[in-house]
Length: 260
Image 1 (tube, rainbow, N blue to C red):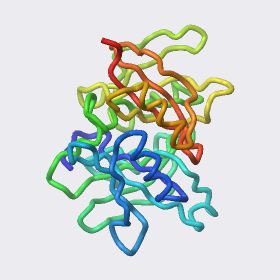
Image 2: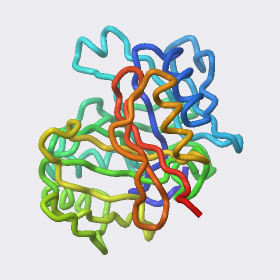
Image 3: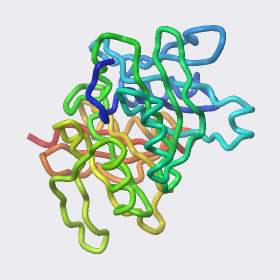
Image 4: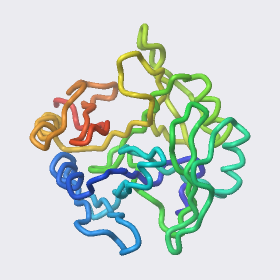
């Protein structure tokens, strides 16, 4: 995947019950999660969007992973030119390595890491010669926005700038909540960072996936056994969003067109 350094290229749901997660997200977002694993070696299933593209995968959270601290969550992969060099930068800049670089034949080289605040993500150099379109600012079913909710916004911003070259060209004041700071990665706005607030979900990366009708999506969350924590509400630019939890309590976001 020759995507520019520092841009998102894949999204991954860790879940103890892939079949239940498939039923939930197929209904709520409109995806088609594979009914069966891609291989017999691990339970990993692709997530297809309505246009036939891919946004990511669903991985079964094994008992061994759970015993070592793994929890149901959404994660993303940041594309890099050199995984090993990026891992060294991550360590030098205060981050941690959970799984050192390894190769998956035909897929690419990957490492699982976390930033200095303990928020996990992957770095990856994909083997494909085609660009990933998992992140697409307006793509239906794709991730449109990456939002970092962190206990140390200034420290996190510096870490990602030093590690991936991100810049922060603009911000939106949010009163007592501080500034909503926009992220530029390789010349495109990919999301924003914000200071974690008391009584909100734990610090994490949060991902917003596009659906055609946010009101209908909000209703589907409840129908499928999840809950809506925030929204529907309008955001700058005219879109409307919700933040919810799936049937396993995993936080996710959805975004749709605003009222015309």
